[in-house]
Image 1: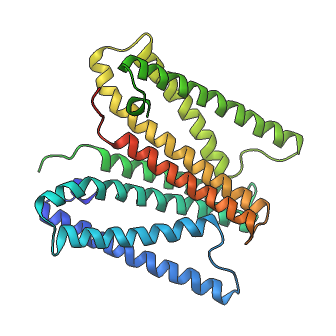
Image 2: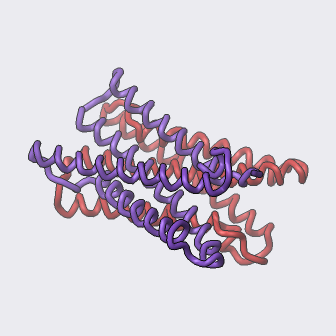
Image 3: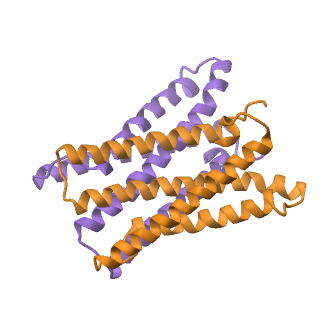
Length: 152
Length: 152
């Protein structure tokens, strides 16, 4: 999205893209650490639901994608030909990982919904509308990424 | 996907695309009817989870998309200019609706997982691996649709 929204040179857009994703990766790792710590302290078992499986795969793939992107597009950089062949795959897997993150969020909301034994009522509505908002957010991001790139 | 995989003219591909989506729409409607009937017979309440909300939105959008596609690309057909402007949006919303269907399936699995009170064990593994397979399926379909079209 940085390539579509940040004003400035392509180099500046790239740096913003790199830094934002690095912050997201760190936040993800802190989040997962917090989950394990919480499970450990409440004597819960780890990694048994689909939510956890998809979430863990997402963060691992995100880390791999970030490292791959860093080494091929930033430092030490692949050759120009290899970079241009790699770029569409980097974008496609970026979308896949984003889609997996959305899936993790939605399954997480479902999980919380059932753990709290919600049915109808305000809390249930809050959970469901959060889910719908996440969906609308996902569609907007997808649209931004798939739209043809503007002129600089 | 018919445009990438069905051998034959573009007209034949279009027909396969139209018919397969019509069958999918009918199957979806029968599925939703079955859910309401089941809820009615077991005295359950309808439409309170995120799974149901996303599922219902998906089928409604799918129906709208099908009707819009039918009238603009098949009969009575829009003008060529309008069709070519509409086509990328038809593809994008096709992907969005597909993504929502996957989301519905995954949240449905989570729901079943918690209704059956699974933790570890074979049933839990079956549910989770089904979820992962659906994810892999989604990624493959996404890849097929986003890949550049082959030559006929």
